[in-house]
Structures are given as C-alpha cells and as structure tokens.
Amino acid sequence: GGQTWDDVRGGWLDTKLVTKARSDEMEYVRSHGVYVRVPRSRCWAETGKAPLKTGWADTNKGTADEPNVRSLWVAKEFNTGSRPNLFAGTSPLEGVRLVLSEVASYHDPSVCIGIIDVRRAYFYAKTKRTVFIELPAEDWRPGDDEKCGMLRLSLYGTRDAAQNWGEELGDTLEKPGYVTEQEGSS
Image 1 (cartoon, one colour):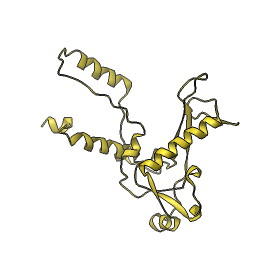
Image 2 (cartoon, rainbow, N blue to C red):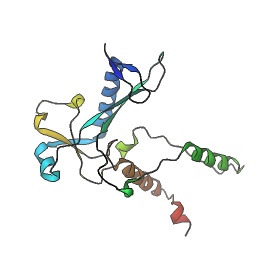
Image 3 (cartoon, rainbow, N blue to C red):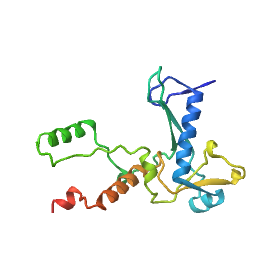
Image 4 (cartoon, helix red, strand yellow):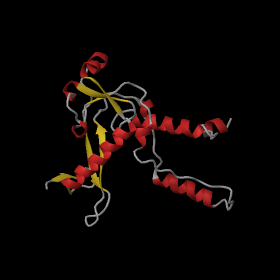
C-alpha cells in the first residue's frame, strides 16, 4: 500500500492504518450525529458562501514498531479577523503540576483532584452558530452531490470549537453544584 504523511510528528504512515483510523473517526462522527445533511442551496442562502472545507490530521501516537495511527477530521475555517472572545485557554503542563503539588501538600484524605481527558471533546459541545461543511469522502452517499453538512456539534478547526467546549464543560460541572472561582469568591 501507499503512505500518508504524519501531520504531527512528520514521516510517513502506512495508508492501510490511516484508512482504518479515518474509518474509526467517521464511525464516531456518525454515532454522535456531529452533522446533518442539508441542501447546498441552504448554505449559500444563509451564508452567501460555500461550505467550509474539511480535511484530515493523521498521526502515529505509537512507535514505528507498534504504530497507533489516529486520524482527526477537521474543518478548515481560517482566522478572518480579531475575535478575542473566541479564546479558550488550555492549562500548560506547569500549571497542572502546580495544582497537583498544592493538593498533595494538604495531607488531607478528604481533598482530591480529578483529571479528565475527554476523547474527541469537541463532539460533546453543541454549536452556537450555523456552520456548514463539505461532506467528507469517507461518509459520501449516493445523492450527496447537491448536499453539504450542517454542524450540530463542534468540529475541530472551527473558530469557536474550543469556546463551545469550554462552555459545555462549565455547564456540565455546574449541574452537580460546582461553582467557578469567580462565583465562589464573592
């Protein structure tokens, strides 16, 4: 088989492994209902533009001897202006280490900290705006020539995906009674 370039680490990936990884990703996309098919004319009527292009980020998270090829389906929405409200920060490793160190120094067994790694996190965050995307070849069906996808959930590569995920996470944590530092400090 052929090869595909590793977008994260560089080097070549076995195309059979990439094909499998992309198939797994599309199965996940379908199972979560990330988008619905709509007529392309709707996209043009509502936005005056073509749907966003999509692509793949492929990488080997394993080793050369024991590959673990992962593919991430992404939108290609490029920065077209300043929108500071779209910022959603991710804690640097040093910040996580500091928090862990502080909690460990309490010597109180009732104090605990949870670290949660949500796989494909953005697929859990509803979109806040209407976004149309090109259908991926891996999910093409007969009759899709005049269709595109309308996102129901956030997709990596859209400008507000991180912000949407941050709001979703905050809302989820507030349901059982967690409060943000700003709320708790007043």
